[in-house]
Image 1 (cartoon, rainbow, N blue to C red):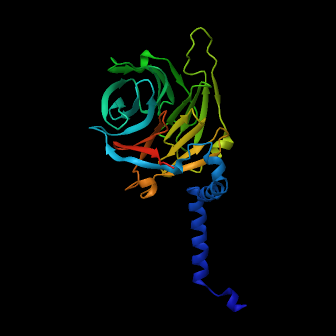
Image 2: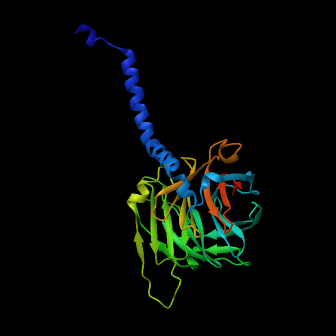
Image 3: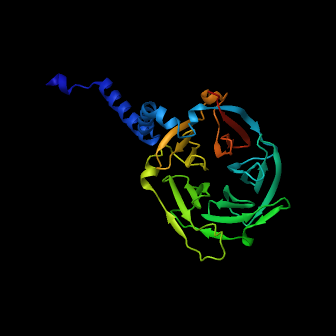
Length: 304
């Protein structure tokens, strides 16, 4: 009896380590991520044929500085201009980039509190997300645009959850179904589906609908969301997480099917991506990534 009640420091250390492991596993979604690795191994051959299959991507342009700018956030591909667009918030600007990461021009933003995302929706038409005010603004950009004033454009405010700097972080647009997908950064991670904005047909009444998919969001084994991208060829959604150093590909049912790690040594990266903020794909399947303060990445699928 005395032996059973005697103090055993190793037992307490083991219990402490198990407790810490459980907390970290829950915090970093390690258990869900490990289960996905098992599923990916089991179904890889089947999923690969019907997806982008991010595991096959390798970096082609690695951490290229983008001109004299900082605080880049979000990324979208414009097929009409064959350009990429991003936003900065200090100062508030839209920037246009070439497909190899060259700065082509910048456009001043007025009346935007904290622009965090931009998304191409139609020729010359984009949506900008203002994080702190949880506001979406439809803007027009052409060759002559040098300034965009939020007061001049159609807007939609969504008072979902608390404000602050954990609001809207990413946008993606499904043109076929006219769905605008809006990512809430964290606490909790959410992806909202907005139907009816931007209002594209002035001849029809505004019919606004906001949907959520809690089951899909629960499958996102990431700590935060930084950016979204919708791939029209597959109907799949890409979700970028800075804190988890990961891009996840979700199929049409909202289930993860492939991932791209942003850690050093993965997919040819010399160093880990420091603070991933934007992801976009083009019509050829190339994947573009930007990271604060002003780093540009291009990934291409490796030849079979």
